[in-house]
Amino acid sequence: MQLNHKQKPDANGYIFKSLCMASPNLSFLAHLLQECIHSNSFQGAQALHTLILKSGLLLRTFLSNRLLQAYLKAGLPSFAQKLFDEMCTRDLFTWNIMITGAIKAGNTGLARKFFEDSPCKTDVSWNSIIKGYAQEGGGPESLRLYARMIQEGHRPTQFSISSALQVCARSSSLHNGKLLHCQMHRFGLQGDVFACTSLVDMYCRCQRLDYAGHVFYEMQDKNIVSWNVIMTGLSHNCLVEDCLIMFKELLGTEIEPDHITFAVVLSSIAALANLSCGMQVHGFVTKTLVVKNVFVGTALLDVYAKCGGMEDARRIFDAMEERNIVTWSSMIIGFAQNGYGREAISLFKEMTALGIHPDSFTFVGLLMACSHSGLVEHGRYYFDCMKIYGIMPDDTHYTLLVDLLGRAGCLQEAREIINSMQNPDAAVWGSLLGACRVHKNLVLGEIAAMKIFDIEPCNASAHVLLYHLYAECGEFEEAAKVRKKMKGIGVKKDPGYSWLEVDNVVHSFVADDNSHPRMNEIILVLEEMVRNIEKEGYVSDVLSFREDGRKSYHSEKLAVAFGLICASFEKPIRVMKNLRVCDDCHITMKFITRISGREIILRDVSRFHHFRNGECSCGDYW
Image 1: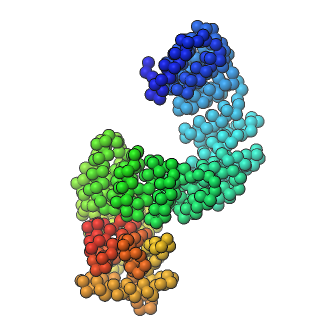
Image 2 (image 1 turned 90 degrees about the horizontal axis):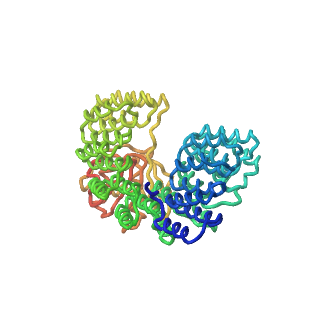
Image 3 (image 1 turned 30 degrees about the vertical axis):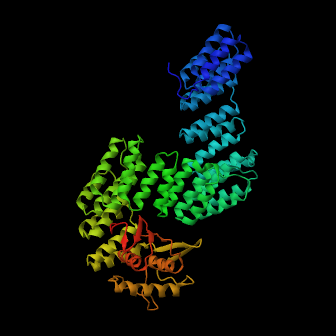
């Protein structure tokens, strides 16, 4: 018989030595059994089992109960079952041990049998079986058992109601969640921190942040789990700025943030691409005990990667004492988004050489890296490699492969890839449509657009892409029809806006928006810059004008002009945009960096562009 892999190496020695040194008595045997439970010692439990049998003490139910626990803790449910069947007398603890043991072994059916056969059901047995079904995905049955418990006259505890709330959270069942909220008041659990934290989590997952906030602020006793739950809820519901505000509130209390707190906060900062805020939290983290935590380290490198600071991200990665697959994948995706395709591939090879098995997320990063760097052969190879690692490509992987082939002009091959899919979604057809616009393939572009409209009739992005495809191919009447159709069905193009941070203040810009207090100065600087770059050969292909007669400028140009005025010369001008940067703005940025000597880092909806000395890291391939 093999020992359990978790068993302490010195546990058996201690137990056997103790058995040799003393005659067996009840308290001493109970002590040794407890040692077996703590150390997961199968051999020790078996030796004690034999001694108890020889001593005639197996009739002592509490000793048999501890033996059951020892076998179950050592991962040997069959031994526990055999002992259970042989027991002459069983008490409530016996049944509860078998119920919880079966649940921990993942056998909810067996746990249910023990539960139903139990002559008397206690809070522990109800809590265990309700939790078991909740954890194993049997949400409806968990709620039925919870209702049955109340019908049979048992009061819910904080544990049973928390399990029921967990089911509601996973299924986004707001109605049932509200009923449980009422029952918390009915049964006097509204002051329990465990139950209230589960309630906050349920409301967050049901996207009712107003209710979640109300419950959270009414809690008299909050712990770090409560704070983590509300911050996670805000972050996952795209209220990342509110998450950071909540973090500042936490720092004003006596509760110490833990590694989960920092991971959530850093994830929110990464979503905002707020480098200065990330650096502040990084400095805070270095003064705490969680500085070496793998989740915190991964979140930190993700912040720097999403702010375009790959040198800092790599420095954090190299300094980490522990890395998991998420760490490696995040670094690979960071390289991919910043246009360092070959570095991403090199890191993947380093990872697999260490025996680390890639997952689906890793291949998302690899395919993205190949797509953004035009590495077509590498992309085909790694797509096929997924099967070697037992990973079936999903819609995201297919979309990235189509994007890779489409960007490279392999439109027919991309079409064949889509045809091989069982149910291609709008995203994969959108990748093909975007490639058709780049390569001005009107016939295939129309097919892709029609496929998208069959799936999502009001897809704004597809309408805009088709409009531009017609216009750029000279089909102005068809372009006008698309514009008219968009107006008729109420589809509007997402307005482009850009933002950057200067001196801890975020400044946002929209084309033709005069709300910024320094807009006149910005326009003057931008007009002078355009005149200067025109002398270097720049020719604008944007001829639109504002109502006041001035030339219209896209939001990223306004943001860069403001950065030229206000941002420190020693630091890059970091601009974020919600849409894809256009050809004209991309060319403009290259000229600006050539004549100004400044570095511009522009993150659009799909990737980073690092402009230096008149060149872009994307190599004009985006």
